[in-house]
Length: 98
View 1 (tube, rainbow, N blue to C red):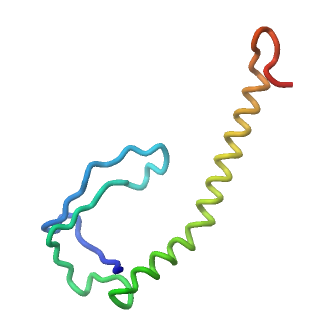
View 2: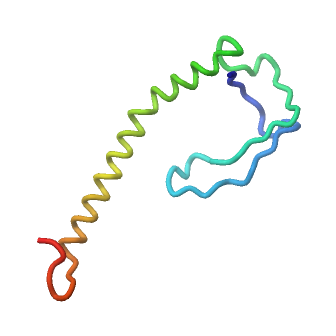
View 3: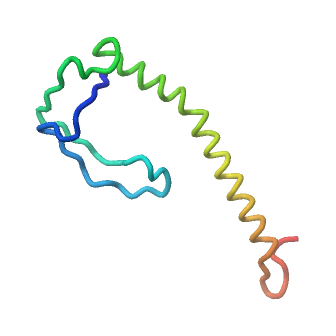
């Protein structure tokens, strides 16, 4: 697996439609199709053609704590929101939660 950089207007490169995300809107999610795209050797990322795998694994290693912290913060906020709602909500004239 190799990593490489290609200009967005490269001949043979086409981008699919932008997907709608519930979160992470700052990161486009779309398909990319390469049809006979030529990639010059100087646009290869890393030490060798097979270095892309280690680059990807290193990126995952760096991003995992951030993703876990994000998920923890979201779940904490959801819990606090649900707790507040249950303390305020009344059904049949009685509090939902005490």
